Image 1 (cartoon, rainbow, N blue to C red):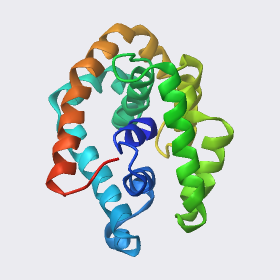
Image 2 (cartoon, helix red, strand yellow):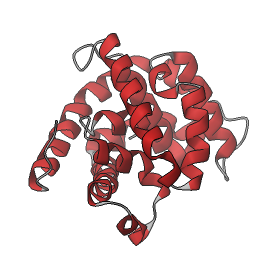
Image 3 (tube, rainbow, N blue to C red):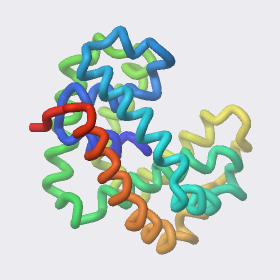
Length: 199
């Protein structure tokens, strides 16, 4: 899953949020360098990714992007699902998303100097471009796709996965609606089993 989903699935718990947001930037046992609540957030991020990668809806839905981006298909589906998450009023209203995004930035900024340098670099772009809120707009999805294409080491720089997003929009919307409740239940169960108290 992508950044907005990880922020939402931290359920406003600051340590979980920080760990979830930096999860891709912390390798192996490096997570042990962080406070316990942040460690749990990093581990939660990893469990979310593992669960997501093995889910049958994901395995099928990734194929939408395979012709244009090959083995990078999962990364583009992750960004796509942030769009549908941000636009699902059954999860949060638009003002509630705005509040969650603002709280997320504020929580990160309190700890930013203690977070991995590559995350700090990326976060400067995220915050300046207000990625988390703007994932609700197709233009931000296209911009994010273009960024992924340019950063991918083995991907044709002329690849245009946004065409696949546009062409298969309704299918992708339905796949998100099928998958996300499963993921949310998985995360809630994981949090309970790890004795994490939510606000």
